[in-house]
Length: 192
Image (cartoon, rainbow, N blue to C red; front, side, top):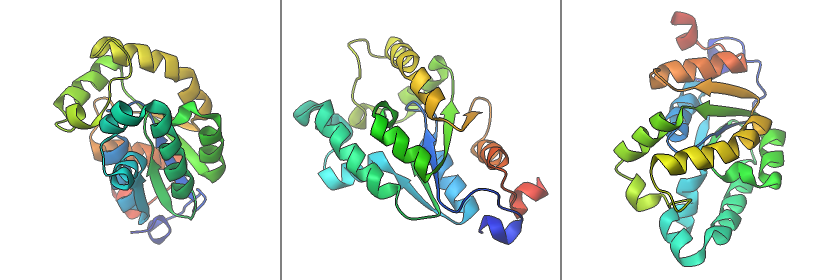
């Protein structure tokens, strides 16, 4: 159902970009948010993997992070064209200034957050993590999450139009919080 069909829609019918560290819920929240709005959803990590025919971990191992970031930028450019899309980007996509500028120009950026311990718990319980996600430091586990998150926080803060905690909330509650921040009312949000 489109937001316009169920109420007022104060966001532009362009792009909503979800940013945040791995494990924050960008894909699951993005899919549900897009469904709620009647928009399409694009997960840039999934598109990179489809295009490359390899996982991100394999790309990092064989071609290096720079090659991955170049692929990611190309996919992001494509994802940010068009209208009425929710785009979930890889946790490090915000590192490139050109990506940040493109995301902000395309529409609203929403930073999904959780504390390092919760992110690590989610990563560990995701069966795809070991095969798909590369290590980003020499310190796997919680120390890696803490170090990388601390380094990226200023960039997430500078990029985000809105910040939404995903802690102790269901997917539906997070989606409702995102819609509220964006000033969107749908029949579903009016009924809750």
